[in-house]
Length: 277
Image (cartoon, rainbow, N blue to C red; front, side):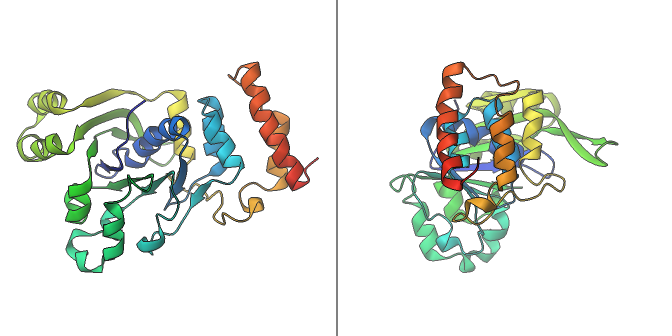
């Protein structure tokens, strides 16, 4: 499991896998650390649930059923990070925390950033370039993930499709060195060698079938939002979807019998609350 610090930056140009990498990183961490999730962009909740079951993220799957994975508008930054024990994913941070419009960033939000660890919160922000976001956010970011994944045009999708993962993770000090001495000055083999040397962790490889399920979770090419109202369970899964889960949950499931019984018991209690037969 990759450690996620209180403030974690995911950086990369369009099509290099920022949203994909953010999800792939936070889901196993949230499951083990038992943190809820809050996104500022559209997600497909059923796709997220299916992915959690396949990956055996049992705790997180149950939190989805208990309505603890939320989508929240980030226009009001002061109210965005409202609950503890939650990972907040802020996509397009360069828009909401733009370095050239730092006067408009709420001072109370910047003050909250310094307290996220004490408040049991984690902020994962995504931007095309680190310099796009406010300096305060950059200075408080403890770790950066540089996304350099490769995409190609797909006739089936009618759009570009990522097929090769390539990410480098740096602590804050090494990321400054990477930007000044590697990213802006080297290319080809020298860039590759020096990027790997500086990185605390790196990964390159083809996408697995499980990885490809992640694209259905977020709004990659027109996915729809799963829910938005955290107080109404019927906006998360309607009764038909609940019944579908109940009848087909264990089809081709990789879970053990004990894991199945544990999750099934929790699901049954939710069905009882909803009045689903």
